[in-house]
Image 1 (spheres, rainbow over the protein chains, first blue to last red):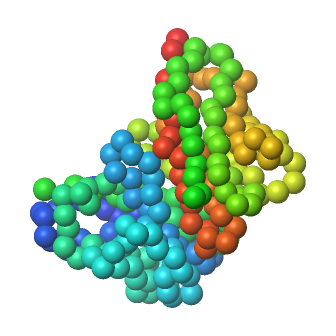
Image 2: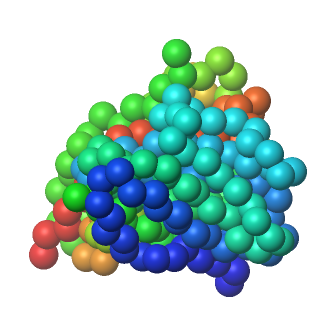
Image 3: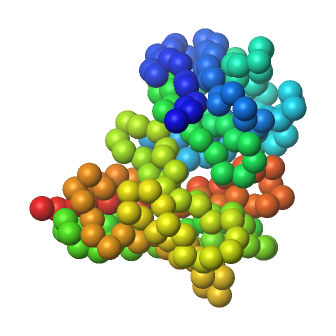
Length: 111
Length: 114
């Protein structure tokens, strides 16, 4: 069964550093997403991406966040200057339309 | 405002007993509805989804859910729970005009006792 692959599974970074979280969506999918889950809280939508541009973003997705699809297979989330409150599990997902497949997540810890 | 409510934060059931996890939503029109399961430290696995048609949907692992428009509910059920069902369960709703963004409930943690 096709999978969404995320790397790394865990990342520890110092406050103020830039991080890039990587995702390989399912190959024939057209829509790509990032969600985050702060420990003990619900899963929150960050951004959706379609046709090489952001189609929707939440209020969480401020100027320190950016997404990119640098080639035909990868989809990345960059956090420019990490803060302690960015510590969370970040999930990538992809879909053909409604209803999609999540990756296993990257646990980001900002120290 | 659009919202998804899972009233039960924790539920404990005995192995072999039946299970029902509640989910209510508040949206302008009938949205797409989903249930996901998350085991500790793992990602989100889709159990089932409702887009339209038959209001009783079957999913994986023996789960089913029933959409009730009059109650704005989409409750998840399983006739006989197994110890391996212990996990966090999330109801999610997708507004049809929201660019496919999912709005998750806060989750229900299921504990299964012997």
